[in-house]
Image 1: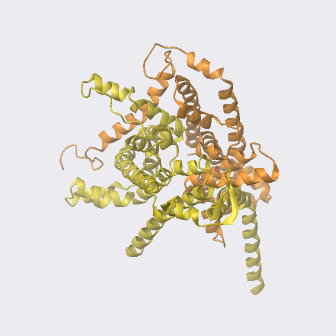
Image 2: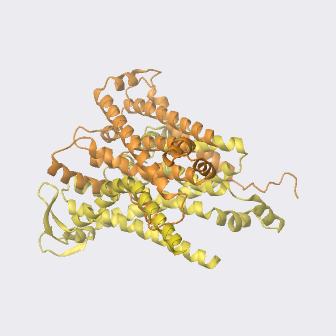
Length: 266
Length: 306
């Protein structure tokens, strides 16, 4: 065989891959750099400044929207993770039972529907419910977010459960541990990294959502992404870059945490 | 013996019931806030529009006729709604090109990642996961600032003397396309990477031992083995792309509408909820058709292998 011949090499692949990574990061890096621009437009560079962060932080609309985003994401991600954990426990580590495939398909169904369709469907039903009950709080948004987060939270937990050794739980049962005790002291600690990962994924998805929130929200219920969409449609200022930069930082922190957690469990 | 069997059956039934109960909160939430409402959309598509939005509970096929046809206000004749057909065509076309383009760029990227050594693999995986977890709106905003007339792309091209006037990319179909390829690329890379990561390179080596060329090895060994990932990636990109809302709203301007903008219009200024509902069901049907083709193809292949 020729010297230096690698079975793994494919011509041009490395170049495309490097270009892809560069192009994935270049626009975001540019966006972040221009957040520190002192000029009043994103077109020209006017020197380093934290001015636009100050503007964003003193904008009460931005603060309100951020707080709302966090409230919704916290509640929705918690509910979605709890429900998904229960569902994952119900659909793994058993002989096939009637309806198992159905449950699986049902839970994954939201992944198969374009978001705009779900959004419109929820818009209609929420309009009806508002008229009937008179309630127009954040509950609708929380329910909607919980629903679309469940399939994403379900998958990592299910994957972890399927790779888990049953023998430890059997051993606990052999030693006369009650089922609930076994669950609390054996299953749950083993499952913990999966649950934490699922929670983080659900939290980020809820925080990022634009389309469903845009259609379901009532007046004055802007989350940070829908507020930003409204602003961007009107024309952009470096303030958007500043908000985006803060948002990006948060995402990177959460992804890093996610990686650390999943590293720990392997 | 029979009583033992009975007991087993009974225990299994109890177990199954417990499992259904355990899954019920998830199932109920998804039914109430994701699946159930879809049936209401279907119902709404057969009703009459209300004067201020919403509907009158009166059967009418007009919404479905309105998806494809326009009624002339003077002589009541129907003609093809060219504006709608344009939008359908743009949505399908852009979603397909996005899928192909992300595959073209995503496959080599995933292959590159899968052929690194264990340690740096983690780093590359981390680097592709960050954009995946990053807000889609922010990434679209980032692309907008690159391709706008005063953005760094046009500025750089002018400085290099390649063009005199900035190229108008923003508010065109190309802008939507660039934006969608950019935001959906990680969705293509991750599943392909997952299938390539487990690739047994002894098979590739065997190919070369039998005097296969690089291209032949790629086509006959690597691509078939990566197929589940490629299909999963294509579905993950096509479904959100055909219903894309953020990319056309931000990059397409008001004129270059896709499905979702047309739907939004019906629920907003258009005040024609039944038409909006019928359009939503149309998107669903396209997605279902695409999924069906995929399932059909897959099961046919499996039978041949068996």
